Image 1 (cartoon, rainbow, N blue to C red):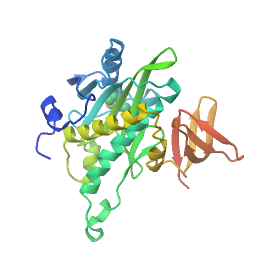
Image 2: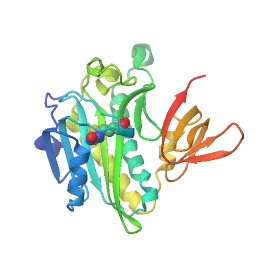
Image 3: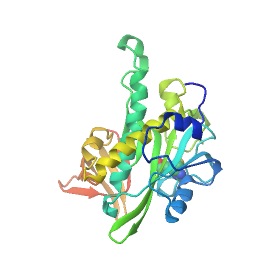
Image 4: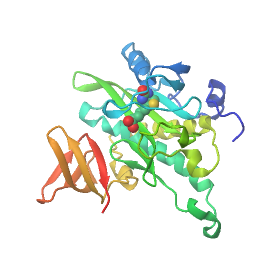
Length: 278
Ligand code: BTN
Protein backbone atom coordinates (compact mmCIF):
# COMPACT_ATOMS: atom_id res chain seq x y z
CA UNK A 1 0.00 0.00 0.00
CA UNK A 2 1.23 3.53 -0.78
CA UNK A 3 0.07 5.03 2.50
CA UNK A 4 -2.92 6.71 0.82
CA UNK A 5 -5.63 4.41 2.07
CA UNK A 6 -8.57 6.81 2.06
CA UNK A 7 -10.49 6.48 -1.20
CA UNK A 8 -10.50 10.21 -2.03
CA UNK A 9 -11.59 11.57 -5.39
CA UNK A 10 -7.94 12.06 -6.40
CA UNK A 11 -6.86 8.59 -5.22
CA UNK A 12 -9.72 7.03 -7.12
CA UNK A 13 -9.22 9.06 -10.30
CA UNK A 14 -5.56 8.01 -10.39
CA UNK A 15 -6.57 4.36 -10.47
CA UNK A 16 -9.92 4.21 -12.22
CA UNK A 17 -10.23 3.16 -15.87
CA UNK A 18 -14.00 2.97 -16.19
CA UNK A 19 -16.15 4.78 -18.73
CA UNK A 20 -19.16 5.57 -16.52
CA UNK A 21 -18.93 3.80 -13.17
CA UNK A 22 -17.71 6.06 -10.39
CA UNK A 23 -17.45 9.10 -12.67
CA UNK A 24 -20.31 10.81 -10.89
CA UNK A 25 -19.12 10.53 -7.32
CA UNK A 26 -20.22 11.64 -3.87
CA UNK A 27 -17.88 11.03 -0.95
CA UNK A 28 -19.15 11.51 2.59
CA UNK A 29 -17.12 11.58 5.79
CA UNK A 30 -20.24 10.39 7.58
CA UNK A 31 -23.71 9.56 6.35
CA UNK A 32 -26.72 7.66 7.67
CA UNK A 33 -26.66 5.11 4.83
CA UNK A 34 -25.11 5.30 1.37
CA UNK A 35 -28.02 3.20 0.06
CA UNK A 36 -30.63 5.63 1.35
CA UNK A 37 -28.72 8.50 -0.28
CA UNK A 38 -28.23 6.64 -3.58
CA UNK A 39 -31.92 5.69 -3.80
CA UNK A 40 -32.83 9.37 -3.34
CA UNK A 41 -30.32 10.38 -6.04
CA UNK A 42 -31.62 7.70 -8.40
CA UNK A 43 -35.19 8.95 -7.93
CA UNK A 44 -33.96 12.46 -8.83
CA UNK A 45 -32.52 11.06 -12.07
CA UNK A 46 -28.83 10.56 -11.23
CA UNK A 47 -27.00 8.94 -14.16
CA UNK A 48 -25.93 5.31 -14.46
CA UNK A 49 -22.68 4.71 -12.61
CA UNK A 50 -23.27 7.30 -9.87
CA UNK A 51 -21.40 6.19 -6.77
CA UNK A 52 -21.97 7.20 -3.15
CA UNK A 53 -19.06 6.43 -0.83
CA UNK A 54 -18.73 6.97 2.90
CA UNK A 55 -16.04 6.60 5.53
CA UNK A 56 -18.62 5.74 8.17
CA UNK A 57 -22.39 5.17 8.32
CA UNK A 58 -24.54 5.92 11.34
CA UNK A 59 -27.44 3.78 10.13
CA UNK A 60 -25.81 1.28 7.78
CA UNK A 61 -28.42 -1.21 6.60
CA UNK A 62 -27.99 -4.91 5.93
CA UNK A 63 -30.35 -7.50 4.46
CA UNK A 64 -33.37 -8.70 6.40
CA UNK A 65 -33.55 -5.45 8.38
CA UNK A 66 -30.18 -6.05 9.99
CA UNK A 67 -27.66 -3.31 10.75
CA UNK A 68 -24.30 -3.07 9.02
CA UNK A 69 -21.43 -2.09 11.29
CA UNK A 70 -18.05 -0.82 10.16
CA UNK A 71 -15.68 1.35 12.16
CA UNK A 72 -14.71 4.62 10.43
CA UNK A 73 -12.09 4.42 7.71
CA UNK A 74 -11.73 0.64 7.66
CA UNK A 75 -14.02 -0.53 4.90
CA UNK A 76 -15.56 0.08 1.53
CA UNK A 77 -19.06 1.40 2.18
CA UNK A 78 -20.66 2.30 -1.09
CA UNK A 79 -23.77 2.32 -3.22
CA UNK A 80 -23.79 2.22 -6.98
CA UNK A 81 -26.66 3.31 -9.23
CA UNK A 82 -27.24 1.22 -12.35
CA UNK A 83 -29.98 1.47 -14.95
CA UNK A 84 -29.94 -1.83 -16.83
CA UNK A 85 -32.66 -2.66 -19.36
CA UNK A 86 -33.80 -5.69 -17.39
CA UNK A 87 -37.05 -6.91 -15.94
CA UNK A 88 -37.42 -6.80 -12.15
CA UNK A 89 -37.22 -10.62 -11.96
CA UNK A 90 -33.75 -10.37 -13.55
CA UNK A 91 -32.47 -7.87 -10.98
CA UNK A 92 -30.38 -10.45 -9.15
CA UNK A 93 -28.17 -10.60 -12.28
CA UNK A 94 -26.93 -7.13 -11.36
CA UNK A 95 -26.12 -8.17 -7.81
CA UNK A 96 -24.38 -11.25 -9.22
CA UNK A 97 -22.03 -9.21 -11.43
CA UNK A 98 -21.18 -7.06 -8.41
CA UNK A 99 -20.41 -10.00 -6.12
CA UNK A 100 -18.35 -11.60 -8.90
CA UNK A 101 -16.35 -8.42 -9.32
CA UNK A 102 -15.70 -8.25 -5.58
CA UNK A 103 -14.42 -11.84 -5.32
CA UNK A 104 -12.33 -11.31 -8.44
CA UNK A 105 -10.66 -8.21 -6.98
CA UNK A 106 -10.10 -9.76 -3.54
CA UNK A 107 -8.78 -13.00 -5.06
CA UNK A 108 -6.33 -11.11 -7.23
CA UNK A 109 -4.87 -9.66 -4.01
CA UNK A 110 -4.72 -13.17 -2.50
CA UNK A 111 -2.96 -14.52 -5.59
CA UNK A 112 -0.41 -11.73 -5.67
CA UNK A 113 0.37 -12.61 -2.09
CA UNK A 114 0.68 -16.31 -2.84
CA UNK A 115 3.72 -18.00 -1.47
CA UNK A 116 5.22 -21.38 -2.26
CA UNK A 117 3.52 -24.19 -0.37
CA UNK A 118 6.41 -24.64 2.04
CA UNK A 119 6.08 -20.98 3.10
CA UNK A 120 2.35 -20.42 2.79
CA UNK A 121 1.25 -21.53 6.24
CA UNK A 122 -2.45 -20.96 6.72
CA UNK A 123 -2.62 -18.51 3.81
CA UNK A 124 -2.44 -21.38 1.33
CA UNK A 125 -5.46 -21.69 -0.95
CA UNK A 126 -7.41 -18.73 0.41
CA UNK A 127 -10.32 -17.83 -1.78
CA UNK A 128 -13.14 -15.31 -1.54
CA UNK A 129 -16.45 -16.82 -2.61
CA UNK A 130 -20.12 -15.93 -2.68
CA UNK A 131 -22.50 -17.36 -0.13
CA UNK A 132 -25.90 -17.35 -1.80
CA UNK A 133 -27.45 -14.95 -2.25
CA UNK A 134 -25.35 -11.91 -1.42
CA UNK A 135 -22.54 -12.54 1.06
CA UNK A 136 -18.82 -12.48 0.37
CA UNK A 137 -17.10 -15.15 2.45
CA UNK A 138 -13.61 -16.49 3.01
CA UNK A 139 -13.23 -19.83 4.79
CA UNK A 140 -16.81 -19.59 6.07
CA UNK A 141 -16.35 -16.10 7.55
CA UNK A 142 -18.17 -13.07 6.18
CA UNK A 143 -16.01 -10.41 4.53
CA UNK A 144 -18.79 -8.42 2.91
CA UNK A 145 -22.39 -8.19 1.89
CA UNK A 146 -24.60 -6.63 -0.75
CA UNK A 147 -27.96 -4.95 -0.32
CA UNK A 148 -29.87 -4.28 -3.54
CA UNK A 149 -32.80 -1.90 -3.80
CA UNK A 150 -34.68 -1.08 -6.97
CA UNK A 151 -37.59 0.63 -8.63
CA UNK A 152 -39.45 -0.34 -11.79
CA UNK A 153 -41.04 1.73 -14.55
CA UNK A 154 -43.57 -0.28 -16.52
CA UNK A 155 -42.17 -3.75 -17.24
CA UNK A 156 -38.55 -2.72 -16.82
CA UNK A 157 -36.30 -1.60 -14.02
CA UNK A 158 -35.96 2.13 -13.62
CA UNK A 159 -32.87 1.83 -11.43
CA UNK A 160 -31.00 -0.52 -9.17
CA UNK A 161 -28.92 0.58 -6.22
CA UNK A 162 -26.35 -1.99 -5.20
CA UNK A 163 -25.03 -1.31 -1.72
CA UNK A 164 -21.73 -2.94 -0.88
CA UNK A 165 -20.10 -3.25 2.52
CA UNK A 166 -16.65 -4.84 2.38
CA UNK A 167 -14.38 -5.28 5.38
CA UNK A 168 -11.02 -4.15 4.07
CA UNK A 169 -8.48 -2.82 6.58
CA UNK A 170 -10.66 -3.80 9.50
CA UNK A 171 -9.51 -5.35 12.73
CA UNK A 172 -12.37 -7.82 13.20
CA UNK A 173 -11.99 -7.59 16.97
CA UNK A 174 -13.49 -4.07 16.61
CA UNK A 175 -16.87 -5.45 15.48
CA UNK A 176 -19.75 -5.92 17.95
CA UNK A 177 -19.74 -9.37 19.52
CA UNK A 178 -23.14 -10.42 18.27
CA UNK A 179 -22.30 -10.42 14.56
CA UNK A 180 -21.68 -13.73 12.75
CA UNK A 181 -18.04 -14.82 12.25
CA UNK A 182 -16.43 -12.03 10.26
CA UNK A 183 -13.19 -11.48 8.45
CA UNK A 184 -11.50 -8.76 6.43
CA UNK A 185 -8.94 -8.43 3.67
CA UNK A 186 -6.46 -7.34 6.33
CA UNK A 187 -7.20 -10.37 8.51
CA UNK A 188 -6.77 -12.77 5.59
CA UNK A 189 -3.74 -11.16 3.94
CA UNK A 190 -1.98 -10.08 7.09
CA UNK A 191 -1.41 -6.60 5.66
CA UNK A 192 -3.54 -3.59 4.72
CA UNK A 193 -4.39 -2.86 1.09
CA UNK A 194 -5.31 0.31 -0.78
CA UNK A 195 -9.07 0.80 -0.51
CA UNK A 196 -9.00 3.12 -3.55
CA UNK A 197 -7.18 0.48 -5.59
CA UNK A 198 -9.55 -2.25 -4.51
CA UNK A 199 -12.55 -0.04 -5.28
CA UNK A 200 -11.21 0.78 -8.76
CA UNK A 201 -10.70 -2.92 -9.51
CA UNK A 202 -14.24 -3.74 -8.35
CA UNK A 203 -15.80 -0.97 -10.45
CA UNK A 204 -13.86 -2.04 -13.53
CA UNK A 205 -15.07 -5.60 -13.06
CA UNK A 206 -18.66 -4.47 -12.69
CA UNK A 207 -18.51 -2.22 -15.74
CA UNK A 208 -17.13 -4.87 -18.06
CA UNK A 209 -19.71 -7.40 -16.86
CA UNK A 210 -22.53 -4.81 -17.09
CA UNK A 211 -21.69 -4.34 -20.77
CA UNK A 212 -22.08 -8.07 -21.36
CA UNK A 213 -25.28 -8.08 -19.31
CA UNK A 214 -26.70 -5.44 -21.65
CA UNK A 215 -26.11 -7.87 -24.53
CA UNK A 216 -28.22 -10.58 -22.89
CA UNK A 217 -25.47 -12.50 -21.10
CA UNK A 218 -26.32 -14.13 -17.79
CA UNK A 219 -23.53 -14.31 -15.21
CA UNK A 220 -24.85 -17.53 -13.66
CA UNK A 221 -22.15 -19.85 -15.05
CA UNK A 222 -19.37 -17.66 -13.72
CA UNK A 223 -21.31 -17.19 -10.47
CA UNK A 224 -21.75 -20.94 -10.05
CA UNK A 225 -17.95 -21.35 -10.10
CA UNK A 226 -17.60 -18.96 -7.19
CA UNK A 227 -20.51 -20.04 -5.01
CA UNK A 228 -19.61 -21.54 -1.65
CA UNK A 229 -23.17 -22.80 -1.27
CA UNK A 230 -23.45 -25.46 -4.00
CA UNK A 231 -23.28 -29.07 -2.89
CA UNK A 232 -24.02 -28.06 0.72
CA UNK A 233 -26.98 -29.05 2.84
CA UNK A 234 -28.88 -25.80 3.35
CA UNK A 235 -31.74 -24.49 5.40
CA UNK A 236 -33.54 -21.59 3.79
CA UNK A 237 -36.15 -19.51 5.49
CA UNK A 238 -38.81 -18.51 2.96
CA UNK A 239 -42.15 -16.75 3.48
CA UNK A 240 -43.99 -20.10 3.78
CA UNK A 241 -41.58 -21.67 6.24
CA UNK A 242 -38.22 -23.40 6.23
CA UNK A 243 -36.82 -25.43 3.34
CA UNK A 244 -34.05 -27.98 3.75
CA UNK A 245 -32.08 -29.80 1.13
CA UNK A 246 -28.98 -29.92 -1.03
CA UNK A 247 -28.18 -26.72 -2.91
CA UNK A 248 -27.76 -28.21 -6.38
CA UNK A 249 -27.46 -25.28 -8.73
CA UNK A 250 -28.47 -21.73 -9.58
CA UNK A 251 -30.52 -20.60 -12.54
CA UNK A 252 -29.94 -17.68 -14.92
CA UNK A 253 -31.58 -15.20 -12.58
CA UNK A 254 -29.70 -16.35 -9.50
CA UNK A 255 -32.44 -18.49 -7.94
CA UNK A 256 -31.08 -21.32 -5.81
CA UNK A 257 -32.22 -24.81 -6.82
CA UNK A 258 -32.63 -26.92 -3.70
CA UNK A 259 -33.23 -30.69 -3.92
CA UNK A 260 -35.51 -31.54 -0.99
CA UNK A 261 -35.68 -34.86 0.90
CA UNK A 262 -38.74 -35.91 -1.13
CA UNK A 263 -36.78 -35.47 -4.38
CA UNK A 264 -38.56 -32.33 -5.52
CA UNK A 265 -36.50 -29.39 -6.77
CA UNK A 266 -37.44 -26.02 -5.34
CA UNK A 267 -36.42 -22.69 -6.92
CA UNK A 268 -35.70 -20.12 -4.25
CA UNK A 269 -35.49 -16.51 -5.32
CA UNK A 270 -34.75 -14.81 -2.06
CA UNK A 271 -34.21 -15.82 1.51
CA UNK A 272 -31.50 -16.46 3.97
CA UNK A 273 -29.39 -19.56 3.58
CA UNK A 274 -27.80 -21.22 6.55
CA UNK A 275 -25.16 -23.76 5.66
CA UNK A 276 -25.56 -26.76 7.91
CA UNK A 277 -22.47 -28.79 8.64
CA UNK A 278 -22.60 -32.58 8.87
C1 BTN B 1 -25.79 -7.68 4.23
O1 BTN B 1 -24.91 -8.53 4.17
O2 BTN B 1 -26.72 -7.76 5.03
C2 BTN B 1 -25.73 -6.53 3.27
C3 BTN B 1 -24.90 -5.42 3.83
C4 BTN B 1 -24.84 -4.21 2.94
C5 BTN B 1 -24.15 -3.07 3.63
C6 BTN B 1 -23.86 -1.93 2.71
S1 BTN B 1 -22.73 -0.77 3.40
C7 BTN B 1 -23.04 0.34 2.11
C8 BTN B 1 -24.51 0.26 1.79
N1 BTN B 1 -25.27 1.19 2.61
C9 BTN B 1 -26.05 0.56 3.48
O3 BTN B 1 -26.78 1.12 4.33
N2 BTN B 1 -25.94 -0.76 3.33
C10 BTN B 1 -25.04 -1.10 2.26
